[in-house]
Length: 339
Image (cartoon, rainbow, N blue to C red):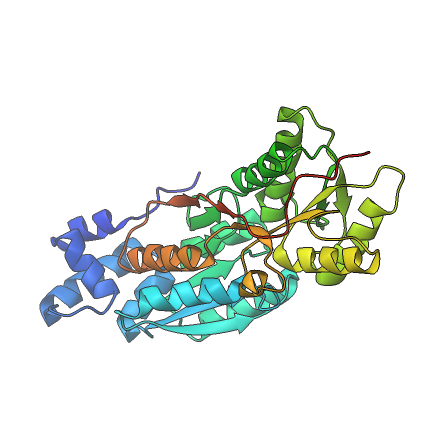
């Protein structure tokens, strides 16, 4: 049977100081007397409180935050911008680990950042298992972005992707579209694919279609421009082609627009398109893509705020959901009426 997890309160009681004093010692804060520091560190050692955090306190903080990100995803730039903005008034700097989606590469990058003594981790849509992430959160302050569902030992910041997909379908159905396709992404071999944003978007789309009395049409490709292009060809080259496509991301939507152009379809007269992420290119006048805005900067700034709280000693897990909004531009319109 596992022994109860040691908390800051336990350390404070053993040392005979306040929890705030323990937090200051753990974070190498100002105003800590040598005597108080010795008492707190002795209590940490006696109780075995979070060894890696204690070790950081003993050798001093690095004032560095490790950020794991797949930089191929355009929205990552907005998220990192939000992370940086929130950290401007602190002494914390970012150590960015640009990796892909392979769990093995992500784990190596995380290990490398921990070996560099980062004070905490922000992981953007990590592909690691829940068990691995939970173990990580027990050893170092950790915040996840984009993974649905919370954890016992880490914080989570996510968009309400189900609500975002519902907004897209509601907008298109409200314009009169009935043949609305959704371009989704394969789930891979993750044990719990329900935690991924693309799964939540697909679930939200499917439920919204049924709520409106419509038949879902999910086309699975890759979350790339080429994937959007191929998915659009599948949705459009058939007897009853889609009159609207909800793409999983704005990048996917760009591929849809390319396919429509090659097929001689006018946007939005012949085909309506909605993306997701509201990346900067979507607002360009020549594109003007209707999209779901998840507020990448808010995701980033919120994760930074939560991580700072973790570094300051908070242990209770927090799950924060961000409500997306629909940005209506020029790629959606009512479907053509059949003469």
